[in-house]
Length: 111
Image 1 (cartoon, rainbow, N blue to C red):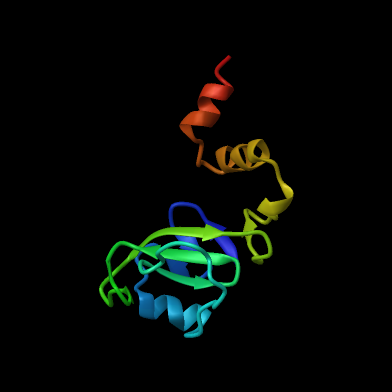
Image 2 (tube, one colour):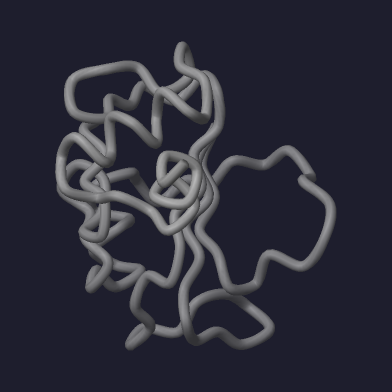
């Protein structure tokens, strides 16, 4: 899946609802206990999708994505490159090259 900075990942966008995420990733959530309260998430193997609204049972139907975390082992590309084979500086450089320059990256290269 292609990581789309400021937009989403694959066919999932930051405006996607829980049902739209499930249409892409499936209904079955990853079952391994991952420590902590995950009521605001849908979690699959190597990806956790956080929502802005939830109750004690999970994201609400009108919730939208607030954050997406991916972990090593998830098949993702960032501008055609595997981010898990890159250093943080290489990722920042790739982002900057594609118009997503961070404050941290600008400060690092200001000197």
